[in-house]
Image 1 (spheres, rainbow, N blue to C red):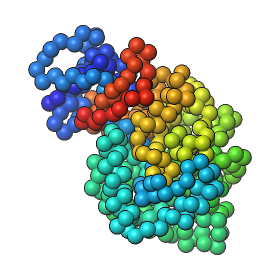
Image 2 (image 1 turned 90 degrees about the vertical axis):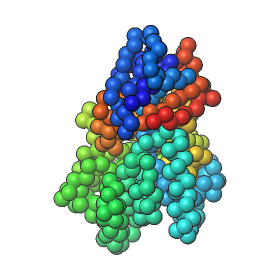
Image 3 (image 1 turned 180 degrees about the horizontal axis):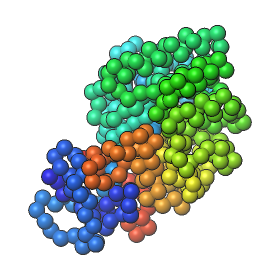
Image 4 (image 1 turned 180 degrees about the vertical axis):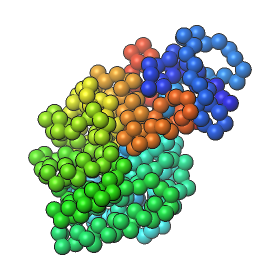
Length: 367
């Protein structure tokens, strides 16, 4: 048993506790979270940390299989050029891809990330995920504008999904974006979802202006119990109003580091602080092809610099509990609550007077 305390404990699912204590068993399960009333007394085995204690982070959007493209693509090149660069440069020998994915997985672990929603176009990362400390949900992604190849593309994605399933990795079939599937492929996916509704899917969303959202796409997305709408770089208030956020079906994933890298632009962050949306907003890192690191704390810092009005507790919720809910694993992680195995992170460098992050903030996994 360990007893962890700090200047503040942020359970996230409840208000922060000054000098709170987190009791954790040897398996990492939360046994209790103690409110000391701000008066911490010495006790045996108490570990006190200078900073705040928070749950392990959830990275709701990543492309682990693109990790070998770190520093390979020109920043600020725009979405179209970025996509063509990925197509040109993503092919590499399998050993290179796997070794880079292993390094990226270890980087996320060091950065306090305990769960990841990962996009995969193939099965290269199966061995990395089965040997990782991180909980992965794999979105087997499909795209293709040649309608005559829709059945071929769909069958290949199904085969990849089966391999992830057989490896014991949580997985689902998912579309890439509104603009990258033929009508025939959308119909294949829609019929599949109708016969076997998926628990969770993901789609790149409003990455460009005037992105056309077809009725077939909306019908398809609505078949899933939960759907992650990723990036939202050009989303407007009326765009977001199309999605019912009261049922917990739709979640908005922000990847600010990637947005700046590709298009030097951020979403309208203020939109995602609205009462009906903030509980459905979460964070992702995207890939090392479009980001300099895989750090959810780094994504929080970017938002905090540009939108300092967002309370720290809201940002932490985006980085933890909301992502866990989006991936359907909030029974296991996302908040410091009895019975969960969320991991515990120490964040140092907090301005306690203003309860804000500083640029020098750093994260250290404690559990």
